[in-house]
Length: 330
Ligand SMILES: Cc1ncc(COP(=O)(O)O)c(C=O)c1O
Image (cartoon, rainbow, N blue to C red; front, side, top):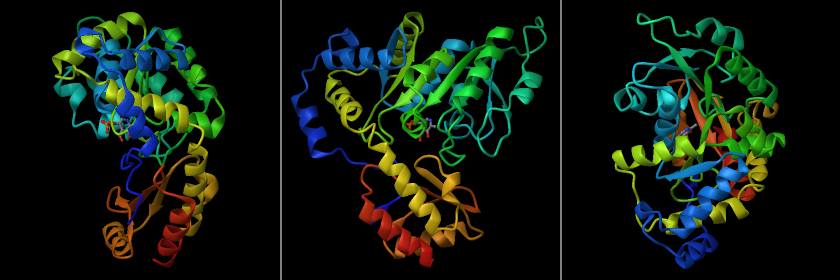
């Protein structure tokens, strides 16, 4: 089976497993795991931030990150198909008491005039107040769309002007960085807080980080424990993350090339595929998924009329070519 359902399906490489086996560990709830500390410090530095916190999942990282900016009873603005709005089971409402309003952009982009019109300043004890704007880069459900750094900078200028703050869901920020050459620190500079994942394109089995100010991270450390996310000898997983940062970032360019190859085979303009996700319009999405499976290719339906293909570390060029041939026939 060639598995194109998600870049989360990767299995740790032999070299990654060896790094995990070698990891020196300690109890991270006591702050004694040296490899977790190394990972947190390194990732904070990559984004030009003071501190970072290792979490089991991207969803938990998003919940903690948004909560550092938004108090219960306040709101965050985001795009309508953002992962925080669509795919975290209402966690920000259920766990943090936060409401959301969304703008709609099928390309997952920042719509600054609409955001400006939606933004609600503190109008006293009658209205919900906007205390953060969340953006997703790359945007998963918009086909791995990249948010241009100029648009992010314009959003930052807007946020500074009105006194609000920015969360960046960077589950796949590495893909945006490799696709555009924009430095990770530039992405860090436009955001007050970020959530970044090691378990997507980078191929680690587990792990994400909240990245931000020392205060935000100290606060998130307490909330992580409250959520049941205090982990013990977890350097074994952080070692996988460090290995991924050393070996699996630049190679994302291969995934992007494979995605363009698949796009072409499916009649999608490769120029519209900036990273590792291809969304193919199909009236019979479920039927297409079943037929592809019969022929050894796993893809997923996203909605009734769209199929999603995601390339990753465990899809070689030969796999991509084989899958392209199958999908083109279908
Ligand atoms: C953009 C984005 N943010 C956050 C997440 C959540 O990550 P996790 O599955 O580790 O909770 C995902 C997962 O695919 C994602 O695509």
